[in-house]
Image (cartoon, rainbow, N blue to C red; front, side, top):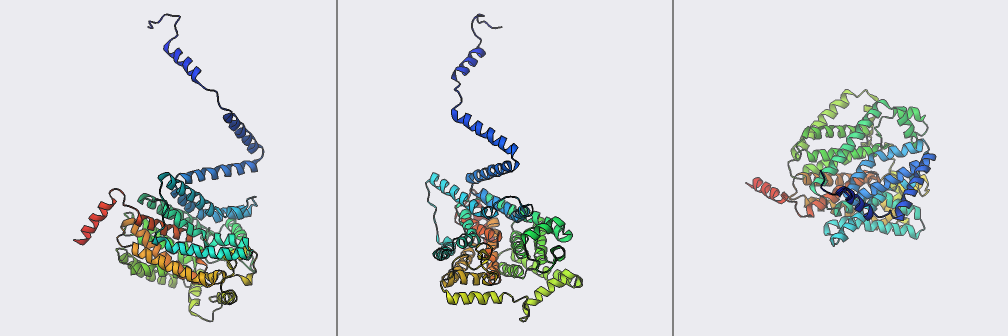
Length: 511
């Protein structure tokens, strides 16, 4: 029972009155914001296309804010979007969705820019400088010669070629600096590798279903994504028969190279993880997809990577050697058992064609290489970045007989001349040397990361002789990302408890 007189307010009433007196009216900006949101909502309801555009804009702003919080999120987002982008682009082309694909296709550059802004802001907040060391020199050299190629293109008034030359040939290198300066922890490395493997497994499973059943909607998307690829064939018959696994990336060479990367990563991870059954399953999945792609360049990339893994000391050598022996036996037995199957016959013919100098199908790249040498003789300084490769054909309007589709070194020779070839070869060789030197003392997941980066760098460099492998989407970005993560981990101070564990491991190994 209250002891206050009835004419005095209760404590709750006094608090409520005080709250009312202290409450301030809403500022005018809040009313304006509410009005704008209401108008946009009404516009989205009445015009569905505008609503979809606004939703996409809101999604982009949300993703950008998420990446600004932590640049590692940008790497995760890129690994999630790369496998799905070609399929989404094909859907947009098939259903004529009004999207500026030439602009949307620059999304890797947008992700890199947001990541770098986040890194710079974080460095300013911590009052630290973003330093470059001698370990970063190889990538700096590759970027420097790319800038040289851009200047040559601009001097010749080839703006479109320069822009798309950067998109095809230089943007992937920027992922190295994002991973290098993002201060990744061991948990970040584990997250990135998990996302890479999970996204690959998902697209591989769906691509295997497509390879077996060949649904009509995938054929329709392939017809718009790979326009004219079927030549004189009926495209419905061609894609229903096509023996190579193009996957939902709609590029068998790219798919084979990505499968080679995942396969090498699995071999490097085997001695370092506990869930070996899952890693073995991923290895056989990726190696099977590599074989089904029938990409000779990807097979060479994988073989070179395996040789590198066997050449580097470590516990990974024994399972790698066992895998090689098992692969040779099983692949030989499988091809012999399926020798009457049409797709197996095509794989055997494509592989055997490499040893036949008179096979025009195997050596149709020679004409492109001769073209590059002729261009170099006329222009030793190069035509400019983007003026001789895929960028020039698909975006700058070059003729078919002026384009170098296959042979990355020859493409560099035509576009950037002697300086380009020398710097690219020097940069890749010294990058391999840096990775090999930093492998000394690397433990556990960091060691698997470094082994994968070294093996795949060597394999992709050899593959680049016959194909424009460093101009592929997806895989060069992953390569430079792995290199940047490994160098960042090896040059960063040890995490709490990490140095003690490594020291104890060294003592046990010694005694």
